[in-house]
Image (cartoon, rainbow, N blue to C red):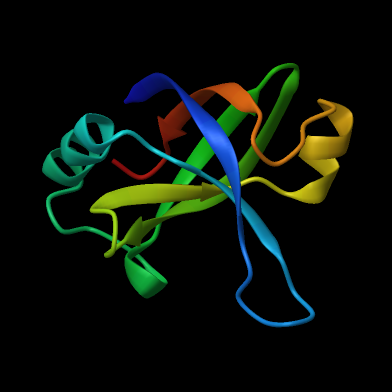
Length: 100
């Protein structure tokens, strides 16, 4: 299953010393993923994915966001640097679900 969407990079300050950057998947895309996954997940409800942003492709996981009702995708620093992305930028994202 391959999904394409656009989202905005946002910062989650989990701890004082750690910051994490994410893109929220649209709720309709998240609903489709939940339907396809049928309850299959890994730790923290995560699902393994292959992601492409610009010219960069990497393997990671998406995680359910109980507050927003969608999945969130972590975007690591190496990707942000390679693609010259900053928090607040809109990005085109391709997500391929690996395990379902």
